[in-house]
Image (tube, rainbow, N blue to C red; front, side):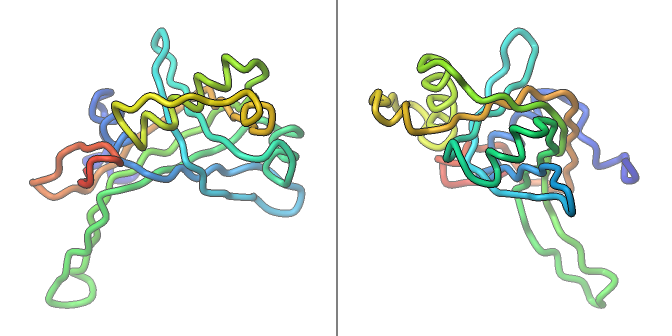
Length: 171
């Protein structure tokens, strides 16, 4: 990382930044160019392993590309704030971001789908419990991204604090 002073090395802070982000971008390999798509997401740590979850149609370009090559890159960012300067070169931008790579598999059982969908909903509607009808589970694809490498970078204001997407404030 070029700006090492902005690297977040504390795991808890990395997770706070991830929680404050409201959109995850998946980068997949296609033949002629990368394909990047924004997705709603949720996450959890299980036995020290970070998992990201997203949902979507079980067919289409995203599903086709992941079926051919499940290795992805991902990125999420938040805490955006323009910092004005007296001259153009003194302008800056506050932000926090996570970037990483991992491997995706699609949930096969209804229980695994419920788990992923519950994590997504917990990210956007903390404290609420949702039911997922069997008919909906049969139609939806739930991607389970096993994170292999992740890094976090932050150029934050001194007032920056973590918050969940559903709480109305940002990192």
